[in-house]
Picture 1 (cartoon, rainbow, N blue to C red):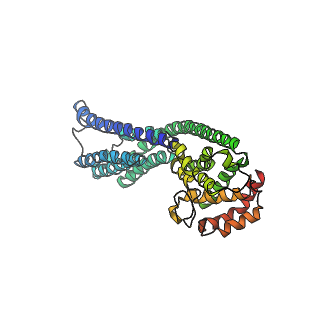
Picture 2 (picture 1 turned 180 degrees about the vertical axis):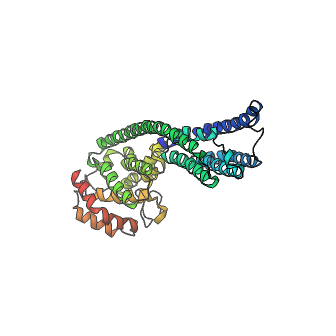
Picture 3 (picture 1 turned 30 degrees about the vertical axis):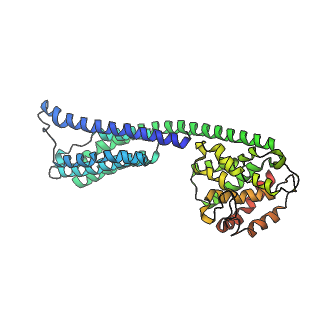
Length: 378
């Protein structure tokens, strides 16, 4: 199970328990405050102060099927926002109606709001924390302004105090998550580089090839700006493993000092499929596994193994194809010496619209100087 899968699973579990606690506290508090406590204190009226409370419960209960819908569609991170905004907006309307004609009797605050603030750190999201904290403060500022009542100061101060406590817990949780995430990435990278080292023992002429291709491709991918931080990580791992299928190629073919026969070339062309099959269960690669299968596809559809054409070729594979070709040309092989970087550059440009994606070739021109630096440092 990869890191993202683990986080999604934990988020789903957290949302489920958060939802259960929300309903327990909401219903339990209202039953106690409006139906049990009044029996012992004649000042507090028995029952809900307005019929709008029933409307509140109707809309809040509608969130239950939404929980299952979001969990099923991997959108559970939205659920906590739905709960907060639904409750806050409805409670604001309810309190405004309740005290509009009698602002002097204003009394507000609910255990649910304390729950929202104190439990916000469990999602390890500063965005959610600030949404809850600032949202509640805005609610009471609006109530105070509309009702012309200064009693809203108490829930505002309480929200700020609880917010400080919650923020301390949030920072601690984030530190733990960051440490675990870093450890996972380091272990994953170590495993990948270990596999590459084994491949390079088999084919010493490719020593450093995978690392350079990954560096070239990452520079181009970042310049493109279409990938998230997590996608770039899996992109990097897949680039490092793009030639893993060559472990299945006989040494006599892989290191042949002369031109390959047609039969031998057909064997070489099996390595993308073999490579994909070898790592298909490594979930840390995610959708980037397409790099391994498709990095030898061509923009004109004359590549292999699937003869994909144009935009049918996955974007990350199109990026890797340029990086792989550039490094192959500027590295020594058993059958030829390395080409000058200037000639490799021209050949990439010549392949625009035939071998390579024209849009990516344009970006390649922008990052070419960075590639030269990588090539010289390797």
